[in-house]
Amino acid sequence: MTHDTAHRILVVDDDRTTLTIIERLLRKEGYEVKTIDDPRAAVDAFASEDYDLVLSDYFMPGMNGDEFMAAIRRLDDEVPVVFLTANEDTRTAIELVKAGADDYINKPVVREEILFRIEKTFREKDRVRQIERAEQERELLRLEHEKLVNWRALYASKDVHQTEQMIDLLSRTINQSGGFMWVDLLRMTPEPIDDEYLKVSKGLVDTILTSAVSQKEIFDYITFISRVDRFDLDIELYKLGDLVPELEAYMETVLGDLTGRYGRSKLVLQSSAAPDGEVTVDRSYLLRIVHELLVNAIKYSPEGSRVVAFTQASEKEAGGIDIVVRNTPKLTKARDTTGERIRGVPYDYSELVFDLFYTIEGFPTALEEEEWGDGTGLYVCRKLLKRMNAWISNANGVDYTGDSPEPFVRFTVTLPPADRNRQMNTSPHELKEEW
Image (cartoon, rainbow, N blue to C red):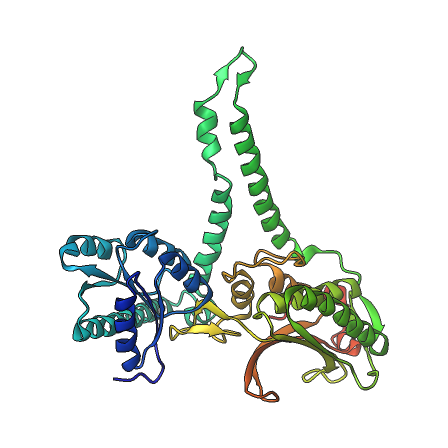
């Protein structure tokens, strides 16, 4: 049996003979296989690469099966995990399945058994995914029938997994600093000194301060998001002949610093001639928006790849300009509607959900150069551009100019000509959101 799109399987066992046997067997069946004899190294490999199934021994030095599964589940709570167990460990294997493993296979490995179990696991995952989609569609039809709202349009622009991811991030951020445990401690531990003062340990005071600082940061972050529409903007008229060279010089400087620091290469294309026309923007905020896009291009691209930036006559707004930032995308942990890992822009997400998805995706990287981090970057950029009657769009593409085709993600800031605002008979400060 061979597979049109080979599933990638991570096999973990401290017995090299077993690894060799399984690797040969699975490769012969068309699977892509990575074998590792150390469970801790396997967790690291899983964190940096993408696998469709994990096949692991249970008893291994340094980390047993339930610890290994917990580590994998922290990185991906959907990937199938199948354990190898000795015949006498059936009770342990059953307990593992109850705890979240997808299946188990008895040792010694039998070819027909291991192939059947793996294929069965993949079929079950596909069936569960199809059932979930059917249930979601059934619920949408019910709500639509009740005429509450156009739920199909809402569903097309909302992904529950991303909402849960944002809630989880908020909860995790709070709990990392002790959550609200200090409230219970403060109730239980103080000893009265007199009617006015209590005796509290320094450790408890430190816990309270650490937690309070963290929670203040979270509430400041929420407040900041709610105030983006009320930022004071200084929108003025600029000649493109002056603004474009400034933007190109700025991108050259910023990218030169970022690519040197983070191991990327850069290409800033220069305009062949100064464009005509005028635009109305807040110059300071425009530069900050461009800076944020360049930082994100570094953050969400693999090391050694190239970031490209340039300006051009707008493709959609005659007389305006486009500011384009392009980078090679990483393969994300998130999945599209078919269950496949997403590389680049997920077209089945709305702009807003995409913004939050793209900036909150679980990359363990937070660059100090980010001005609007923690999942706010693209959202803030888009909101600010709207107030300038400008906008940002995104798309996937493929570059065929190199030795081999290379995918890329492109972000385009479009600044319409100033006379577009005058034609609308609306000042930039009074522009209403169109989307």
